[in-house]
Length: 602
Image (cartoon, rainbow, N blue to C red; front, side):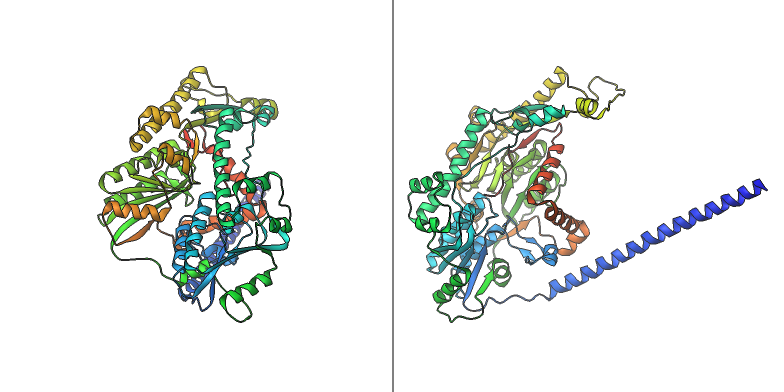
């Protein structure tokens, strides 16, 4: 009876196990079906919504609405995913599009003027300069520009000061205190945690690894940072002095003395033209347009204007504009990165396309993987041999970003572009003491050669291993400066003297020969057209903008939603810190041509 009971018990257990399996399988299957149906339904709704969108009408007595808190990336992009869960437009125009729209609005009889919402500026220094320059050109149309903000940040004021009139809330104010750059140093924390960094670098100004080596800035880093921060500050002072009629010495004294603490201070020192509430500013808009007061001003957002007007040209020869934005990485990379395989193929495609008469490479990158930069450099060099290849630098074209730019036929940058940083470093960590003394964990194993385990970080490197890694970095640096010397047609010794990892602004880069001219993307495109000897041309942009369906099927939509959710949960600064930590992990034992600091908007 015991054996028989055991037999039936075993059978019962198997049946229950199978029942549990099928129950779990059925639950997962149903969940997948429901997810697929929801996914399909949302896709159909959004595709239908997109296809049913009519071309918006600007209307009469329109005022172009420029919100500086919007981050205008280099290239326009489909924003359908974000538009589902927010008030954002379904398409985000790129910086060049915004500049062209402001220019187009000069001759558009529907647009009576521009209103600048000047609270926070999400655009960095070079992009802000481009916007300001476009607004300055707009003023030649004799149409008005009014700027307003309850509390105006310094970055927003730098752009908005070009306006005919700038107002702030009577209880608000204007931030006016100058620029500062602050770096975090982790050496003390690493010492306490018994984490030993192994650092290798080439270039006395290459300070990317200083936070792991020192507790404060080196003299070389302090020197270079002082120069470029003051260069950007000088640009701010000169711009405001020109538009507000206040000399730069007075403006600097106001900042140094903390003299602007309230809206009344801003008015007293002529930084603003008046203190008004929102309704009073709108009343002035009606007066300027010669219109009667109605329910609301006909504000036309940049996104709406982008859809409403067609300022593109489809006649003539084709010029390829390739947008290289983000960190430089090996392989395909993500949509926010410059993957060496992806961009190698894009440049090659433009080179081999006989219909493409010239190539413009728009670079906005702090650099990254040195070998990936070399791969892209090679394709730029090949392209240059067969057709004009011009480089346009955005906010950043530094280190690896300069590596991929240096062999262009001509290089354009903004005066406030951050470039140079021609240097190399590599970084790894010995974590054995941390695991042993803090976590009580030790490691052991076997190896076929003495250095087979050097990449594990579970023991100190030997002197021979350190020498090999430093030699690797030195070799990459020598290759880097030789590439720059070849592209810039300068002696290697001269390039070495201005390299050493030193950061330069665009204006200084022109004076030392790293950049040819100050100009924006449109200037670079015009230069490429002249070099190709074409008068009529149209632009083909790469990478091609993904449709909403492509975003869904490629996982881009999922990543966008995930990024938005995480950012909202931990805050923008927290999300940037998380991304920075992830980036540091990817540096392990890989030579990096990367900017020595995180460059954020002003």
